Image 1 (spheres, rainbow, N blue to C red):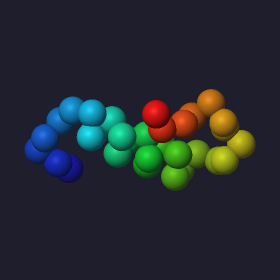
Image 2: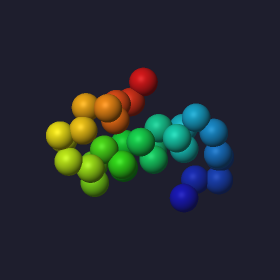
Image 3: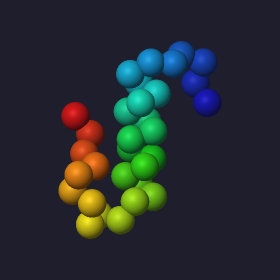
Image 4: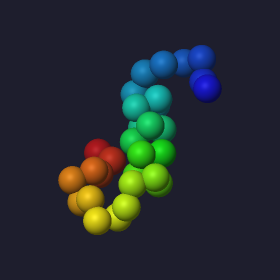
Length: 31
């Protein structure tokens, strides 16, 4: 876990979410 919390943390969470989520969900996309 990084100490810095901000947009970077959100991007990491989105990336992890996409990794654990099936690709059949086009709604989840990183901006």
